[in-house]
Length: 469
Ligand code: AMP
Ligand code: ZN
Image 1 (cartoon, rainbow, N blue to C red):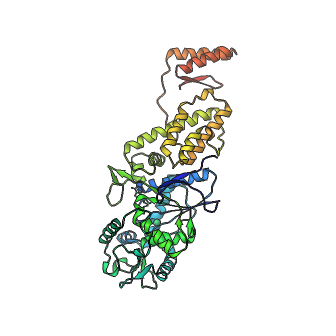
Image 2 (cartoon, protein in one colour):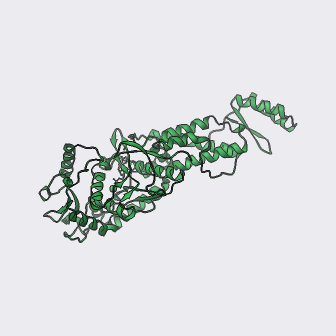
Image 3 (cartoon, helix red, strand yellow):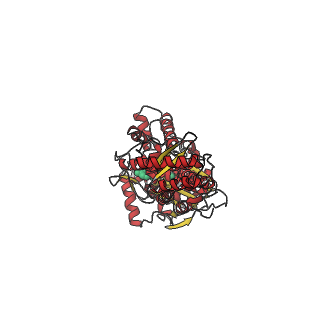
């Protein structure tokens, strides 16, 4: 196919083609969920955008290697497992299963590798050892280990933050935690290893620096090295991860390997509610379950999440789910109209008449533009005038686009039957009679007359029905 995906790159602030470094497989990493409760639809906005990115790359003929981690140890998982009276393992297993179930109903492709932080403690310890040996990290007097930010000249490159802002951000982060700042050489330095505290309960591991657990940022660097190597194609997450999480990942990885780390950065803007980020801490979140209770299906949620460009904030309203329902019904009806002419669905690998929609998708994942173009093409559709061959190409193309967007069409909800006016019914009867008399010319003229009045005729062996166009 002629179009290859181009994506905005946060690091260079340019739109660049997404091409595999090895010329074969696009290898990419997405920061995964912290499993201490159900993921909300804000989290899923990011995961759905990444899913579409993968589908577009694969639809364009390039295989992918998709790695997404599970954060199963941090302050929140430890705190809430204790509140729930469960071991960390049992607690995070339950929420991981729930996450997987939600991903399935949202039609998200499962990552090829889904490593967990707890299962990679030795990998994280090995990375800290390298960083200490290289002079980029040091052990504090409390048994924690810190990354020395001043030792990495490129720190701040991704987030484009000035030195002053970095200090500000770090001091906010520091004041939000109970870190003893006197064990660090600088406020900006961040923890690679956190010494064991009484509130950690049974959740600690041995290390050369004493018992404790890894800092949150480290897991991604260690697992990326394990599954994607020192250089890989693309890294993605929500915009809230640019600083400090991704900035810290770059520092850890570039200072412990010889690689460049990610060659492309894709960040997804937030789903908001009344202008504020949807988040657990603000209590303004919706889960799939909340919306199912209100009668909305997962595909309707998926539609809402993609109906806004991934790089711009999207405000969530319940009303948008009603619009999504209507749009999906329209798509399902178009597919049904085409299936009347071309019953066997050919799984197409090309967009056919939806070439413009495909092109828009390839241009920085313009999903809203692509959907607009799909509807534009469908609005011009006159099924009665299509040959079987044309309908097959069109249906295949529609199917290609829907698969690339990960939209599974819902069942068509029956509408109240439309009254057919008497004069239309008479014309339709005359056409049927002409057809029975093999007077094809008259039958054809009458069919066209009906069509221009907004009615379609569907023939069967037993007779005919008249439906609105
Ligand atoms: P977490 O489980 O908090 O680690 O987040 C998982 C993913 O969801 C990360 O990529 C976050 O950046 C992303 N995320 C969190 N809140 C939102 C939101 N309101 N809108 C879009 N993405 C979000
Ligand atoms: Zn990460």
